[in-house]
Amino acid sequence: MNKFVFSGLVAGLFLALSLVFYVSVSQKTQQVNTHKITQIEKQIALDLPLLDLSNELLKHSGNKDAVLTYIKTLNTYINSNALRVVAIEPKGELELPLKSRQFSRTLNSSNGAVSIVFKINNTYLTATNASFHLVFLIISVLVSFWLKHIFTQQLRTNLLESNDDTTTVPLPLVLIIDLNNKTVSNSYRAELKVCLANKPLCFYLALVDYCRNNSDVSLNHSKNVPDELIELANKYFYRLVELGHTVRKRPNFNNSLEKTLSEVRAALDEVLIEYPDQKELYYPPKAYGEGSRSRLHSYALTHIANGNIEVIGK
Amino acid sequence: MNFKNIMLHKTTVVAFLFLLLLVTWICGQLTVNNDDLQFPVMIKTSTTCQTTATSNTSELIVFTPSKKIAKLLTESLCGDNVVAKQYGSVIGYWGYRTADSLEFVGKGIADLILAKNNIMAAFRAESTYNYQPVVGFSDYTAFFISSKEKPRLTKQYFLDKRIGLLDYPTSRSGHILPKQTFKELDINLANLKITYASSHNELRDLLADGKVDIIASFWKESDATRFSKNYITPLSNNIAGTRWYFKMQQNNTDLLCAIQSHLLNMSKDQTLHYYQNVKPYWSCNTKSVSFIKGLGDE
Image (cartoon, rainbow over all chains, first blue to last red; front, side, top):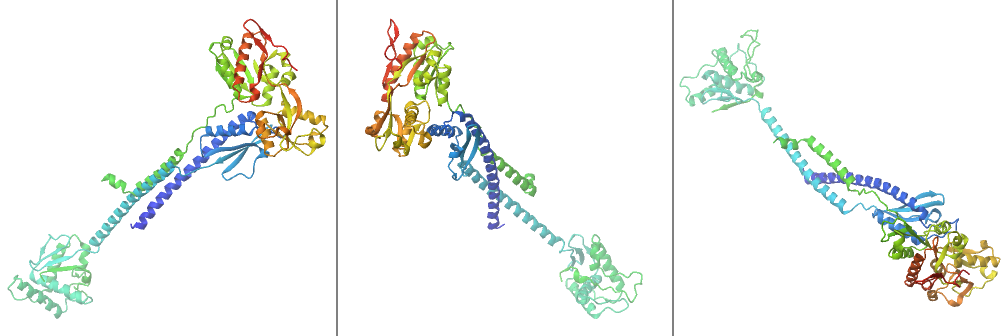
């Protein structure tokens, strides 16, 4: 959350609170004023017979001073700067137009209509209201901090979740083949290790390398093992010799191919027992039905390019 | 941890913001001052005070057209021994409007009333309720007063003049006598430009401001500062001044004498020369109380 968003949030909250407060105060003020005006009108109506207003019919000039004194007294009882009585006059003598913020009400009596001029002077920004707005500002800042905290927290958990995704989903099982102690294991359960004899180990490693380089090759039992594959197997065998696992001469990888593959399969079965969906990647395909010597059957690891094999001590 | 989780939940934030807006609205409603307006009796027409005889329920009713005099007199009567012997309280009414004084006189409500003798005569109050004059102010003369020339009492003179009169029909100098004069001169009132004022002072302001050419009023010493004494024309001499009348339904001479002395004392404190110049109608000795002859009605 950058600074612009944060200050925008503060401003938005402050404006929303201020607006609600303003509308509330205005609505209440209007309501109170309407009520007060009714009360004042009632009082003036009560005092009207004693008010020395001028009367055209009776050629009575009235006592303006007495009326002004009355208005002054009335205003002291109204005791508010927001609402004041400005004038009480017979309707015909009212000075028009009224000034701004003034309005008149009419009392109809048997002696003729009397106009009362009120003045409303609502000052919204009083000390109380200003302090309320200050409080709103503080609350806006605090709430924005809160929201910011929530936002960053959420961002962090999202990030953590996405990190988890990258570690679990795109980093699947890795088949670990350790040349140092001739074991096969998977990365999920590294403690489960299955030992493999020299010949199947070398042949499987060679097969993996060979199939990686030639993804669409077809390896048949009826044909001889390709020279390239033999060469790779020999290379791994020499590595095993280097590591001191054997002193025997290198085996013939063409001989008893089916047995070698079975040993490989048995080891992989054990390692991948909990992950059968991964078998397809690492498992040299078995012949189903057509017979192990069938021309169609291929033991090539066609999907090995998608698998992950880590060779330790290569 | 649980609390923290709750605080981090989006629903909490939304609920909190909603509550915050609600609280804001309520705050707005509460900050507006919602006091009910309470008005006392706004226009008072009387003042009451207690004498030392608090258990006595009878009231001495005083009526004057002036609020100031009513208050002064009520206060001073409450402190009087004779009044305290007879009354528990004194109520002073002041006439807010002309009609009030007519009611008080015509129905004989007040025990003591300040009134013009023409009104007392109109209601025959002196014989009906036995209102007796106690103290009277000196007679005076009514004048037409102009600011620029001496008014002439001819029909032609008045026809294009703006004239200021008093609006209350009980006034002799400011209303009755000038209108009588116009009648004698055979002037139709409809052809005159008459402006009405509510008091003698207001009339003088009208003249000084040039809003009228002539006013009808009495002459007082202080008028010399604003107008010329050369530019006044008398309408009629010896208009009987206002008098204090006391309702003598019993031969209550003690009270009469007490009231007379209070009225005389009060006149001395008045600022206007006219009101200082009073004369008593009764001679109050320790032996006898008698009406002073030769001061009777004209």
